[in-house]
Length: 191
Image (cartoon, rainbow, N blue to C red):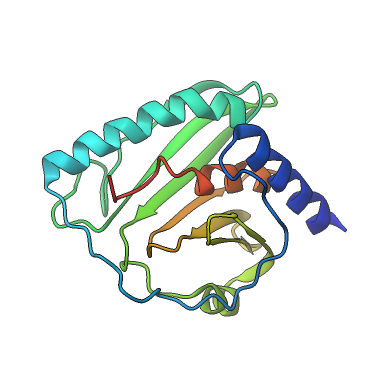
C-alpha cells in the first residue's frame, strides 16, 4: 500500500514539475541494458565544470518546487571521486543540503554518461531492495530502491541513450521528490 502511494506521488510530482508529461506506473525492470548503439561522451575538465555549474543552478531553482517549500538549498561541489575532481570522468555527483518540512535533508545526485553505468535495472533489483518502478514516459524507467540498513532511499532513471541518473536521500518519504530529480533531463552528459 505504501509503495502505491509513493508511485502515485512520484507520478503526480513528475507531471506537476513537467518533467515526464503523462507518466505511467507500468514499467518493468526487464529493460535491455545497456542499450545498443550508445554514443560515448568524453568532455574536458572545463566542459564538465561548466556543466556542473549549470547543474547547481538547476538545483537552486528547482529543489524549492520539487521539495515543496524547501529553504536554504545549498548545492555542494560536483565531482567524481572527490569534489571538484573531473579528470577523465564519465560521471559526476554532488550532495545538496536543504531544509524541508522543518528538517535538514541531504540529497545526493549522480549523473552517469551514456554507457558508463552498466548494471541493468534487473541487476540493481537483485543487489538492492527494489520497492517499485515507473515509466518516465520518455523510453526509460525509474527504479526505486531502499538500503534499509543505512536508511537510504533512491530513485534511478535508466534512459534510452544509456545515461543513468540517480538521486538518493536518507530522509523517509522523499521517494517522489527523488524521482522528479532523477528524471529531470537537465541532468545530462549529452549537451
